[in-house]
Amino acid sequence: MRKISIVLAVLAMALGFCAPAVAQQKIGSATAVKNEVNGDVGGRRARVSTGDHVYLEEVISTAVESLAQLRFDDDTNLRVGPSSTVRLNNHVYAPATGARAVTVNATKGVFRFVTPGHSRIEIRTPTAVLAVRG
Image (tube, rainbow, N blue to C red):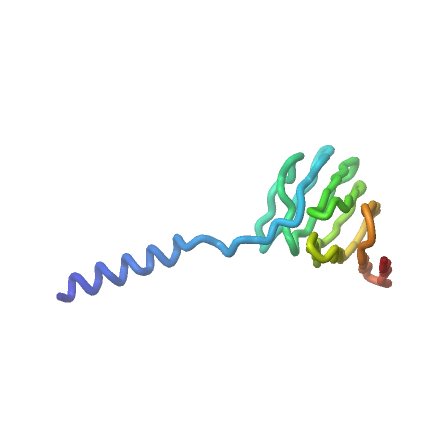
């Protein structure tokens, strides 16, 4: 009986270590990537390539002479310039109601937004917040 308890305890521990990570919410994809672009989701840093998904709360960073163009599910485009870092904080897209909202933290660098319609965009920097409604 004691051996069975030990085997079950070891098996339970092994299964606990193999549990899948919590799935991240996909909010768009990288439509163009030049040179070194990285994404960090939940502490996992990986190289971003054209066609890769981007996720809520992901931090996108570009190296010198690097660029990333991201397209969100609502067709909003975000272009991240060289030596830049942005966090994709919030994304709301409800086609049935037309609700659209994007919030990013731009901690350094340059970026450009192009939105296809009425969206609520909020860009937070270390010193200011830019909000566009409608």
